[in-house]
Image (cartoon, rainbow, N blue to C red; front, side, top):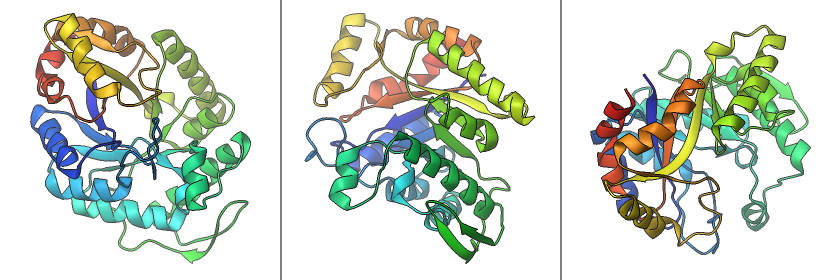
Length: 305
């Protein structure tokens, strides 16, 4: 059965909104809970407030009891492997073993420039991500790591305590066929395609499978996840109004058409993704969060069954 995640973007959200949305998502039966990793708002006006990602996850970890927790996705330039592993393990303990380590190459130049963090060009970002994931995996698996790489250096680094999970999963977001997908195939436990049609998912999934085969890895060991937007209302017009109340404040939203309508209509739009091999559908929400759609997850599951 397909799993569902809820991603509550931090742009413009008060802490009380993030808190209440997380609790509502767990009550509604979502399997995972996500937020973003930005230092300034990346959707239009940079002065719109945004909270830091890992500390948000730590608070959610203490508030919730069942949902898995992660960043969609953590920015590779922000943290070195040692700090990243220590942070993930700390939140894993707070949550009782529910962390997913979501990572991506990073992209939003203004926040890097404002905070003095090197970003680099596309190949540099991809290489940094690959190195970060590789070293962090070793630390999470209990190794003492000495590493001299292009982007990171560690001298007998170790992480104690280790994670509660025997294998803390790593999820990589992105769909670059030449750089990101090879990294996914080599080391990730989950892959998130952040946007795109069913045809685009099938195309990139085929590339991922090919990379996995070349490495001798069973591609079924990599969970496929997608990010979609939508609003569940019995009337399509009401659904459209609901989603635009939350997205019109920000620029660059809804690159793909949102899924709008009753549970049956939304389920029909998701069914081709599930048939194509998607294991988890993450629904993205902008503040003020659409808690009616959150609450109707059970109806969507039933319609998709």
